[in-house]
Length: 435
Ligand SMILES: [Zn+2]
Ligand SMILES: [Zn+2]
Image 1 (cartoon, rainbow, N blue to C red):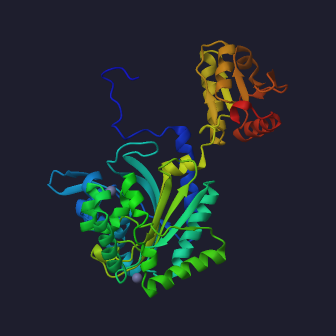
Image 2: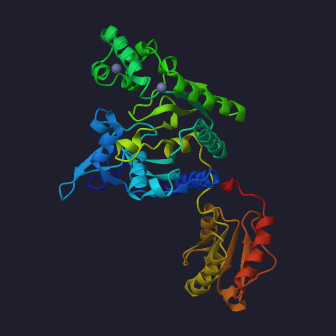
Image 3: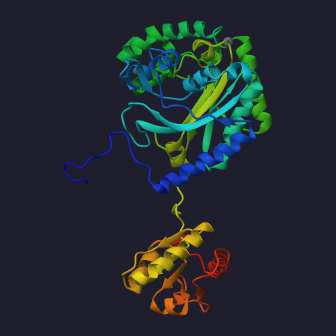
């Protein structure tokens, strides 16, 4: 417990320490590699946007815009918001940077923090990280299938076991009639629905499916489903996406009640649900948003994309026990005079990309060796009075607990050092602390 008066992080915000960071870096590196093979380039966006961008893209009546955004008035009285998601920002950038004319079918991926003032719970933070991707200018079923193939390939590559849940949410042609049917259903079941759902039924019945109240969810299981109310064009599009996924051997589960909460989603909608995450089990989701570019002042340009939650992805894939800095060698100066040659030796090894622990002098050899052991080093290079006199450092094999026969010349060139230690390191058995 921190002492009273200690400054702590804000509720819902937290630190990501090296062990976890290392896993995130892997998740991000694999994303860049896999997405790159599908023609995606990375876009880095500001975390602050004009509030209007989210009000227009997410819809004024959404929970995100009404309750969850970090909105503040800047000194010049502009209303600004910490981005609650990135798609709106990607679309703004697509328009603002002229990609809409210079590269209309551009594929962009992003990663970074998002901010929502939700109730903190396991695996959910008010600053959370996403990896996402967007494809513009294509409305054919092929591009939806391609995106989903990429997504499942990525999840496989990072070791996430997730189920792809798929639906079509219709479009401007078929959804209004469906919305009316859903509203009629809700009006017939008002007694069993919560106050929020009463409001949703009137303002935007599709949002009924966002409700987290159990009794509402039970009622909505019997509600009419969009999948049964698609127009011919939407039906054909969905059938094509499914046929391509089937041919490609991508497994998915149809979820006819899956309705993305946001207004601009049309046709293909999906979620990725992982095992072992409890009730909040979605690691990500996405879909087609053909109306969004126009809603933000651009021309009619189609779009499709997804976002994955990095925290949940890390939870779903498990963390590796390996420490971030995998120390292989510890350099142990026994006294103050040994410090300069110890720093020189450590620097030369680090130049050769060895992870080196350099201990403080002035402790007993026993204490230094214990410290080297704790860091998981396989080899210790000891520099004391004898070593300074002979110009050769003692190498201790920490796994075998004995000194290596050939002492190491203190002035050995970096490459020579590296070669010598490499041979020894390879010969040493794997240490339990490194497993
Ligand atoms: Zn409800
Ligand atoms: Zn339709």
